[in-house]
Image (cartoon, rainbow, N blue to C red; front, top):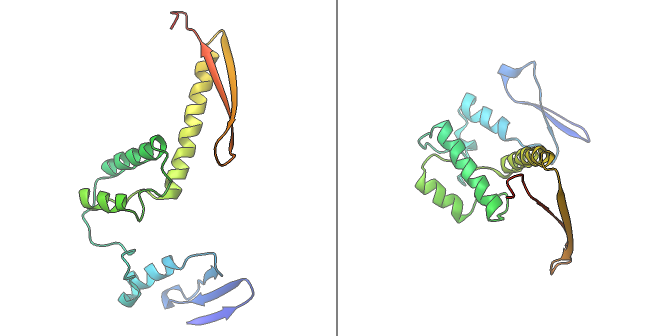
Length: 165
């Protein structure tokens, strides 16, 4: 293995198959998991398999549509119950899901954040479209703070449809 080092990067040439390619890893920022995965799969370096269960086990695969359905249910639970984005990772909820649905890997917090952002944009657009059809509306405002002095501005819109609903 060739190794060069400067202030910002460590450079390793790990694999003769990649003789003309160099793998770079920026100090303290980038993971080495892809390098480890390559060494385990291609070079059969089984000593690099993580013992703490983070490496994938031989579990049955679940169908993609079932996985998406479970992810959607997890996101709904996070939104409705005001749970943290990583509620289904490394908790008893994760253990429960893995026991009930073998092979299911709970949704990651980054995926949750990305999907909630998409949902926010979707529902925001839908609300704007709907409010464009309303002819007259009243708006009330309320400003309050919780016990930790986090302030909230609440806008409530009241309107009637042509059916007086």
